Image 1 (tube, helix red, strand yellow):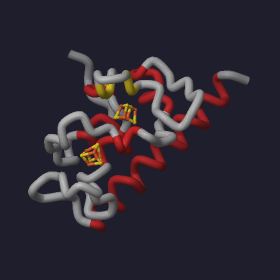
Image 2 (spheres, helix red, strand yellow):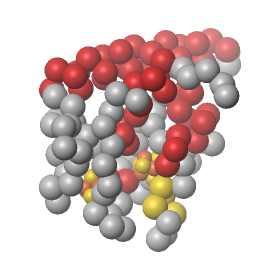
Image 3 (cartoon, helix red, strand yellow):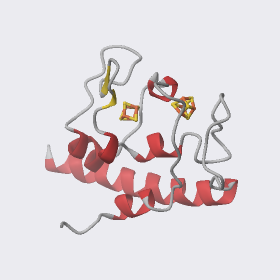
Image 4 (cartoon, helix red, strand yellow):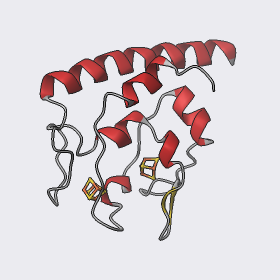
Length: 119
Ligand code: SF4
Ligand code: SF4
């Protein structure tokens, strides 16, 4: 098994929970992702407001590899589910900010490295 990246290690700190059956409301969005997440998911070719990884009736087709922001919806007190779903112990405001701060730093570094490699 390949070694996890620092971004994948963040995933393990985010509590999971079962969503309302069939609900995809959180995927009606322009999702943010780091270059390594985009690569793992096979790219995000948006042609409308719905995430292109959402397939009719099948939910997320890259669920195991979904980006960090998708994992934070309803798993943080800062992004509550409008239907009241979520884990028993969501991430606190401080925990969410700590993860996002580090994540955005790594994302920026990857974007800069990607830009340089593609000049
Ligand atoms: S977190 Fe709530 S709104 Fe989002 S997909 Fe799950 S049930 Fe739907
Ligand atoms: S990657 Fe998956 S979980 Fe994230 S917005 Fe797209 S369909 Fe939803």
